[in-house]
Image (cartoon, rainbow, N blue to C red; front, side, top):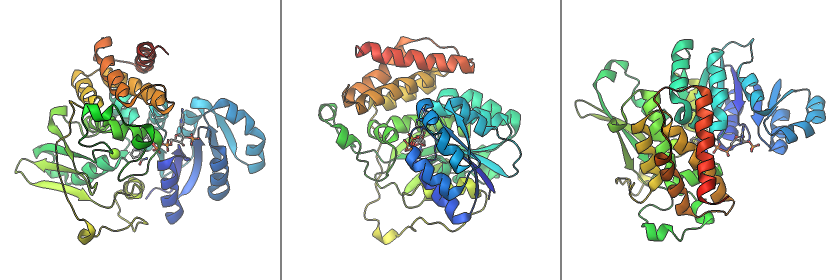
Length: 385
Ligand code: NDP
Ligand code: MG
């Protein structure tokens, strides 16, 4: 188990659940970051006594300066601040858990890796937007990249027998199907924001909840798995499993399938990323098989859910196409949450961006942020914003 933790995005759904694990095991919190929610951040500072904090929204950070002095913590500001936290020196046995939402987490992931720290990654957008840069940095710095996303934690656990790795046939990435499983395009035209924000099995931040309703989340996870496990997109099959009990599976060449199961509680994969390779007692409930009534499997409908289709095509094309679909999605979800566009418009924007730009296979960090910007501008242009 890691002794020291830098937790980025501590006020979010993953952030607060991570602190629940930290509370149980008394891991030392070196630093915390939030964007705007200083009320919760202040409570966390009082309880976990970090030495450093970062507030990424500059105005909120400026207003918090006096308070930070009073609380005796050093305050960093802005997105550069999260990179400085990720690069803090002087601690052994330390991990950076990145639970920031969106491409806003990418530079901090890279900064942590470049400073030689292991990273527990919830921020899947780091791998979707800059997967090549992240994985090259992991190799160069010889650090661990531990998945927090439940499906990827499951796959990671199913792949632990390194001797059988060469005979891996495929990854079966499970999906809940979200609140609109089985809906037709016509039915999707009618859905509201409130319906989209109600996930059947998981309680999560608003952006990933919408991503789960559009199936963009599964598309992002497919791309995340390609990078994490070094597999071809064609060797990952998406399986809709409505109950979210099997968190993913792997199939070997002898047709043996290994699955990881558990209650849908993110504290299980979060804890495993912090205690790996040890398994320790958890606050999450155990799985009662007799309480599980149905156990179902179905294909995902990517003709209807265009975000998933776009993500599949983007990773097949390579280069910065995944970054572009991610940027279009981040902007479209923001517009949807602000009642500016409809549910189906999200898919239209994300699929549309694929045809719009030409990207090479090689790219730099500047290229990543340019592609993201172009994708967001494209979305605004099609909706006249
Ligand atoms: P939340 O929206 O609940 O939390 C996001 C966190 O990031 C908050 O601490 C927020 O601060 C901070 N933040 C928001 N905007 C910025 C920004 N521009 N720069 C820096 N920090 C920012 O998200 P989740 O916890 O649901 O998700 C976090 C990540 O984990 C996402 O990448 C998601 O895909 C992934 N994930 C989440 C799962 C879940 O169950 N929630 C499951 C698997 C993966 P503030 O609160 O102050 O706004
Ligand atoms: Mg997931």
